Length: 174
Ligand code: DGI
Ligand code: FE
Ligand code: FE
Ligand code: FE
View 1: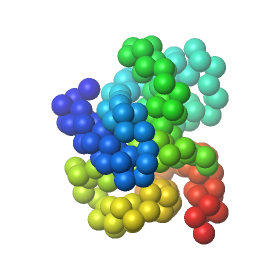
View 2 (view 1 turned 45 degrees about the horizontal axis):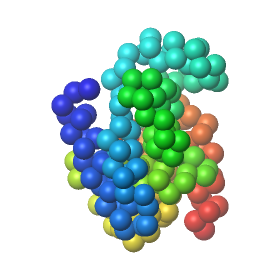
View 3 (view 1 turned 120 degrees about the vertical axis):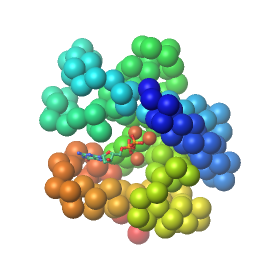
C-alpha cells in the first residue's frame, strides 16, 4: 500500500483507540482493526473478481468496484495474507464502507474512526467529529446519511447494504 494510505490507516487506528476508550470498546481490537481496515484498497480489480468467484460471494458484487470490494471482499486477503482470523475485527473491516444494520460496537468504532480521523477534511467533518464525540451511534447515522447524500449527488450507484444500513440506523436512533 502507498505511504499515504498507510498513514491514513495509522491515523484511523489511533482514532479507533480513542473511540474505544470513550465508549467501553475493545482497545486492542480497535487498534488492529484500524490498522488493517484498508489493507485491500490497492489490490487489483482482477484479483477481487477472482476472489468473488473463489469464495462464492453474491454475483451482484460484480456490478460494483474497489470502493465496495476492499472491505467486503478484502477480509479474505487479510485472512490469507496476514493470517488474521479474529471474527470481530474481520466483521468491522467488512462493514467499514457500507455499515450494516447490526454493526457491533467494534464495527461502529472502525466505521467512525475512518470517517473522522485527523487527516479527513471534507465539508461536514467537523460536525461529524462533534456528533461522534457526544454519541457514537448518532455519528454512525450521520455518516450513513452523509454518504448517501454524497453518492446521490454524484449519481453513483448505491450498494443495497448501504440503504439497508441507513434505514436500520434511522429506526434505531429516532
Ligand atoms: O477507504 P476509505 O476511502 O478510507 O473510506 P471508505 O472505505 O469508507 O470508502 C468511502 C468511499 O466508498 C466513498 O468514496 C464512497 C464509497 N461508497 C460508500 N458506499 C457506497 C460507495 N460507493 C458506491 N458506489 N456505492 C455505495 O453504496
Ligand atoms: Fe476503506
Ligand atoms: Fe467510511
Ligand atoms: Fe479508510
